Image 1 (cartoon, rainbow, N blue to C red):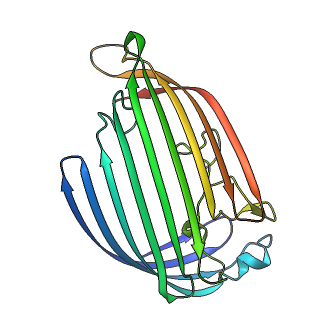
Image 2 (tube, rainbow, N blue to C red):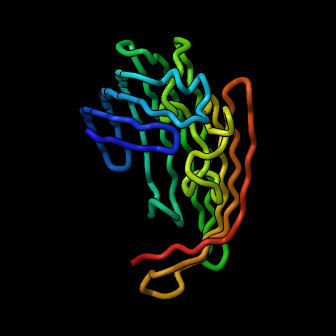
Length: 220
């Protein structure tokens, strides 16, 4: 159980989950059931009418299935290997929110000249709602942050109400990275250049964002 306070509202939360995982070499299957009770209250004065529909007590149940094959040599900035993952989450039928959330992630890493590596990735997602209940932001797709479109705050991009991000039903992201070899044999640090671009939409509003830059990965 936990109590969280965001910039928008206060939330008391109690959650419970069970997970079953089966692995064979690089292939992994995962089935998970989770249920969460939330009490949302004390909204900020700028929160929209739709977001205030979250007020009160909410029970959410979710059954998810994940299929992943990960043959990369590093989880953060791999130099070789491939990753593909499919995740499917079914919300409901108990509780106010009922939907099917699907997400696919593809990534390929290939060595090129002078021990540099090129990493390309694609992420797409689609949320199908079975009712009109306004959903909790984390139950939708979000964009922005170090694992998404970099240079922006976590989950700060996309459709908004009163200038507050509300998430989206459709998501597409691409990422390209050029990774240098480690600066010494101790594998302490290496450089990488990146380009990220993402599109997110709730059906009524669609937004495209991009960023590029240079970073350093360090192992401590």
